Length: 119
Image 1 (cartoon, rainbow, N blue to C red):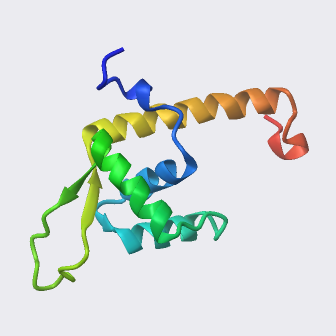
Image 2: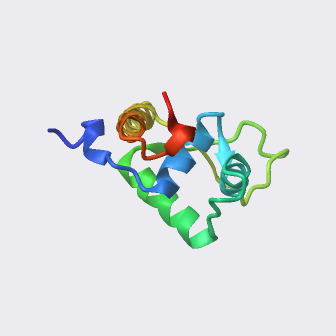
């Protein structure tokens, strides 16, 4: 496998997975990413600044996301950095969701989820 093979990034940490999911909705700055993750998980996932920005830096280094130059700098807070998914990041996310789907299917067949997981 080459270094750019999306499968080399799997499995994703929960923080990275949720950041990628938040960025599927478009460009976001750090605080907006954290707020969306908290909202979409009904508060079960909360990221402090260390986790959020440490994950973002690793994701930038891996090519999963990229920093975006804002087109309206006067309207945006200049201290905020905005991020978006790269094509590579999108592919990694797709592979991870497929991987998780396979895990859930196995769990359902084995009745791990009880009646709630019935197929």
